[in-house]
Image (cartoon, rainbow, N blue to C red; front, side, top):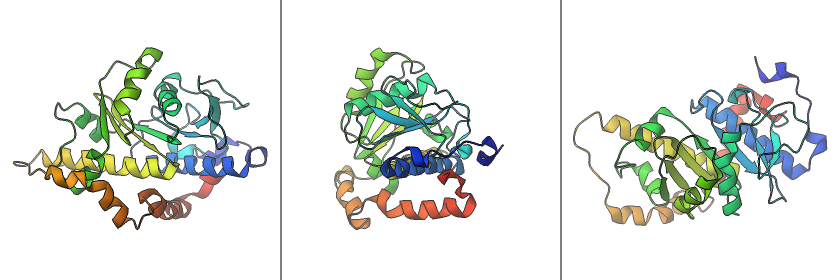
Length: 257
């Protein structure tokens, strides 16, 4: 079933121009997660803060696959996961437990992206965590936290520990569970996940070979400055997002509806 077959009415006239842009970007992020094969059927999540609100967020309609999600199908919820619109779709309660904690604690977390990829879960289960063995890894390791597994994320009492483990970082490895990124925009969170996932894929492949060569810790310390230089001060999200949207548009532009 393709997204157009769901016959979801457009919400563009019901929301502000700013919210609509966020909806389009968030729908695109879901489609790109599917395109890059990071989705786990319907069991992972990306959330975005509604512009102009500290307590309203957009999340995927539970049950739709990520390649079906459109700007209009996204569900608006509050910090407790309660629906704020007349969407016919439910939301996954476990899906927003982690996200609500991060959004509430981090004003800069406009978007929170969480995955259960095979590579990400594999590295999250390794005692040594992410290793400094690739160029991609230096950017992640310069802003990475770890959170121990406490079961399926349903309990509010886990939130303070998760928030403390994330701190002010961009990347969080959820032990035995998966990966999480935050960003000042949907684009920033998505591109951060691209690098996080790439690091894990490289590590799993490299471990199948011989002895590993580690990057000098001094290089990791300067990674943030190097990232600003190679992206001309724009940041990787702003630099790459227009091209990613054009790629989606060539495949199927229905995410914009």
